[in-house]
Image (tube, rainbow, N blue to C red; front, side, top):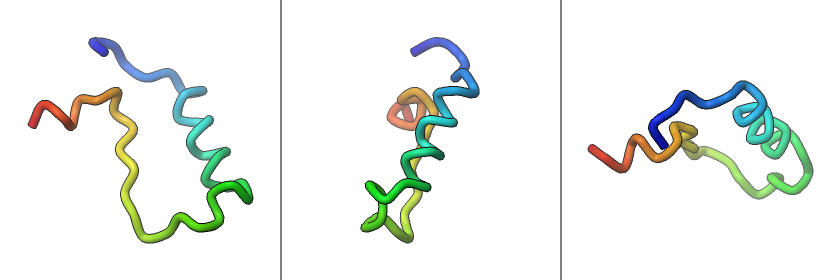
Length: 40
């Protein structure tokens, strides 16, 4: 994406993970890097 992420973008993921909607998610790593990890 050629830019740094904004704090609120990270906050949206954190809010989701803390919600009941994410109750079935555990023991995983969720990259929040704007797709940069796909380059490697």
